[in-house]
Length: 298
Image (cartoon, rainbow, N blue to C red; front, side, top):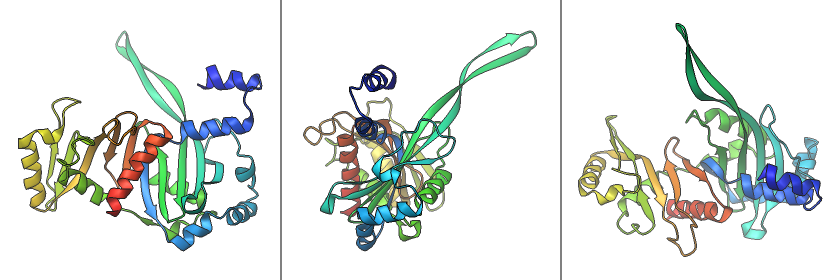
């Protein structure tokens, strides 16, 4: 998209800087992310979605450009603020803070034998990672960390992002919003939700520390179609077990036009964490997040 469409269009003057920023917001803020849910008071949230307050905080940092003319960053060496804005109005208003960093990975290419030596070859792959913090006017907050290829530990990423945002958003005024209730509801109501979700590989843990893991026979199979597996899960959970990891596919068109494709989410890790494992459109992303929030607050 960048090489074949955006760059030529910019050079030809067919799109302007504001258009490019808008395209980037749509294209990169909903891509392979681990989400961490938080909440804050409505009073605090109302302050944060006030553009005058945000401008005042940015002025202290000499970074009003983030609000007026967001910089377009490529692969910065460290996590760097790139966009601050208020989306929506009234009860739909939200403060959005975006930060970008360059990541690099070693990608294994193969190995060659040279006498008694084996030479392994790797190539360095560079990736532009985008993190987003969004605080809605009612206090519901999501922190999106673009997923890593080689780790499932996001503590450092969370701390870096919150520290970067702290002059604007005080991290201490937020508390984690657990998704435990969502994992439980999805399984308990699995029969009623059979036209909306499909369960894949899942993991369960009890108070004694025992772990039970179940996997489907193929990618398209539904775990709760297997009566033996379902009964095993119900029995395990009944005896002080919990839903540790849930692999869920939201079925295409299960709510009218949305989602527009099958979407994969994984509930695993921290109590307020889940992952959207693929790139998706803004409407699809907002739909899944809305479903999870609705179930969590029911």
